[in-house]
Length: 234
Length: 234
Image 1 (cartoon, rainbow over the protein chains, first blue to last red):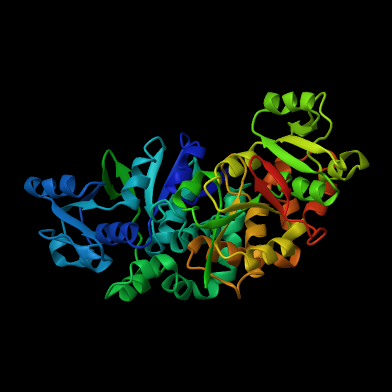
Image 2 (cartoon, each protein chain N blue to C red; image 1 turned 90 degrees about the vertical axis):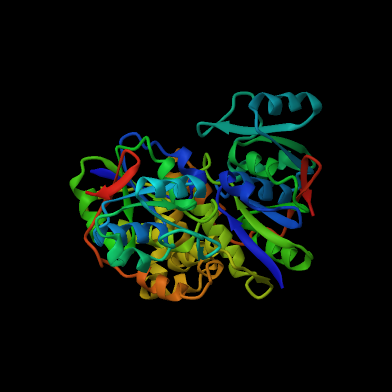
C-alpha cells in the first residue's frame, strides 16, 4: 500500500524525504485557492515568485501580475490575492506571475519531489483522485504562516487524508493528531477557520467572503501541477 | 490575562520569543516522565547531557549516570530510560547525570526563558498550579522525536492547556489544533499513545508498562525546575 504523511510547516519539511513522493502544496488562505480558481477559469499558467520586484518585472514579458502586501493589492499590479480576482474574464488565456510568501516558499522547498501539485478545498476531490492514480507515496505540505502551523492548512490536510484512507497507509503521529483535530472540527470547519488566529490576522474587509469561498469543497476539478517553474493544469 | 502557546517541535522553537516566558519542557516517552519520577523519589538533582560520553564522565564526579541507546541501558550506566529505574532506593539523595536526545535538545533551546520547568502527565496538576502562580506567559514545548511532531507530547500539551483555560488566553492556531485533537482522543489517551508511531518505534520489551505509567496523571506533586544546568525540585 502507498504511504501518506503530513508536514505542518516549511520549517519541518527537511525532515521528510520527498524524492519518491507526490507533494501537495496547501496554502488555503489564499495562495493555493487562488491558483486553483485561476486555472479553473482558463488561466494558461501561474508562475510563483517570492520577491515582489521579480514578479513585477514579468509584466514586461506580457504576464498579468498578482500579489498583495498587508492585505491590499500591490500598486500597479493587475490582481490581488482574492480568489475572485482570478475569475475575471481578463485572466482567460493569460499567464500570471504571482508573488506570495508562504506558498512560494513551500513550492521552492518541494523541488526534489516527483510531482508537485496544488491543493485547496476547491479541488480536494480532484487532488485525491490524482494521488490515487499516481504510483508514488504522498506528502501533504502545509505552507503555514511565517513558519507557524495554521489551522486551515492543517484541516485541509486531514480532510484530504480522509478521502485517501482506503488507498494510503500512514504511521505518522502528525497525521494522527491532525486527523483527530479534524474529527472534532469537521461539523463546522468554516466557523473554526473564520475564528482562527490566522484568519484574524488577515482580517481586512472582504476577507470573510474570501474565507467562505476558500472553504468550499469541489468547486473545481482542476489539478494544478508544477512544470519547470510554471503551474499548469494537469 | 496571561498568554499561553504550544510549540510542537524543537525545529519550530526559534519562531517563538521565550524571553518573558515560563517554558514547560515535555518529553513524555520518557525523559521528562523519568525526571519527575526521580525528583519525586528523592533524587537531589538531574543534569541532562546531549552526548553519551559527557554523561559517562560524570560518574567520576560521584553522579549516578543514566541513559539508553536503541532501547537498552548503556553498558556501564547505572540507570536506563524507564521511570521505574528512577524509583529505586539507590537514587535517593543522589545526583543523576542523564543523556537524552530530544529532551536535552529542548532544554538547551529554552535557556532564554524566564523559567524552564519539566512537565509530564505524572505531575500535570502541579505544573498547572505553578504556571498559574507565576506572573509570566507560558509556552508548552514538546520535545518531539528527531524534530518530528509526536502524539504523546502534543496531547500532554493540550491536557495541560485544558487545566489553564481560565487563567491563560491563547490566540494560537497550534493550540486550537492540538486542543481539538485532544477533545477527540481524551476518552482513551493511553490507547492512542500506545498505538502511536512513536510508541511503536520504542517498541521494546517492557515499554508498554512504561507507557501505561507515563500516561498516569498526578502521581507526583513535584515541579522540576532548571537552576543553572541542573534540574531540581521547585
